Image 1 (cartoon, one colour):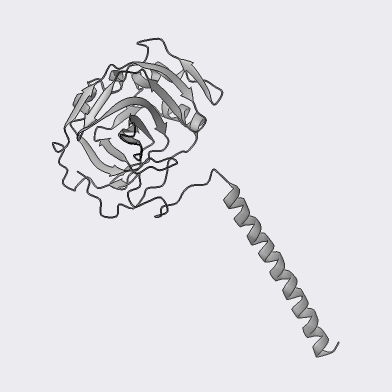
Image 2 (cartoon, one colour):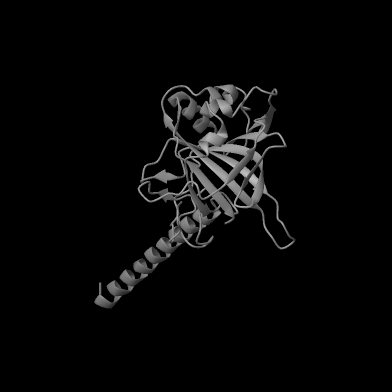
Length: 254
């Protein structure tokens, strides 16, 4: 076989290989872009004050800076299986005020594992108590005050036991709760107002779409215990639903 003919065959097969590789690459990219479940990795596409973050406990924190006023009835009316999280809904009437703004208690939900880190340490579960303030003007957007509660493995948690068996087995279903069956007080064995005397505070965002950057975060320093079985039961329902930590970009944590 002549040299020129061999060279022609070699170039031909190299071209086929390149086309095949490009097709595989395109297919992988399309699969990634079409996968709605993939993580949103840290970046600036959603803004510069995103959540969650890694909190450094040795920094100076002034917990007296934010005046918090509670009007809390501790009435939880329903538990929901949303597929991606377990959510408890508050009855209307409870409010929390801070920094001149009043918010209504709306719901609390879980993330497994935790979203916030303390000194680089993650926890097996985190609960968000979400409080909502509607837009003040036509051009405004909603504002939120979110209380984050971190969990570590330990003894059985009375509060979780009160609703765990009531969670609907099918996703996107709601189970109404008898009045007084589930009490947030049982989570802390104390009043929420006392728990809010020790926290890490910073300004950030929602950790789920649309990642709105109007959130006052209060991450409680008190780490709550729950049994491995309770944490696993919630994770079995919602899966691993924690967002990656985001860059601080010079924000102050007080």
